[in-house]
Image (cartoon, rainbow, N blue to C red; front, side):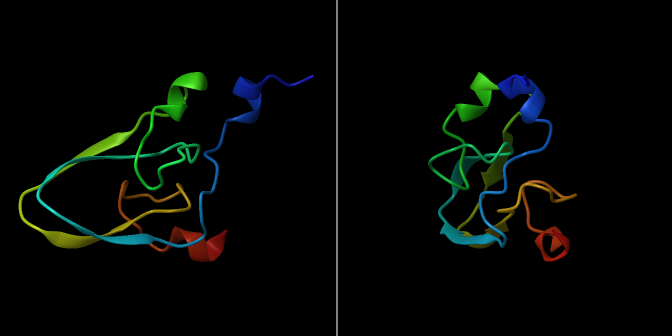
Length: 86
């Protein structure tokens, strides 16, 4: 029987499309595993698996960001359109 760790070789697809969010200046932590209940932001759920690490970004001034929702982007944490091929 597979353990959860073995099953979690790929991130969970949180949604097949970006999370487009207007952010204020500050520091944000993007979920790379797809398990967070606070998508697209990390809530520490990756700690259960230990395979994925969140990605931190600093936003210097308010702006709109398209965060990857499928967790397969080649440009984390930003959406690069990979979800169109999943």
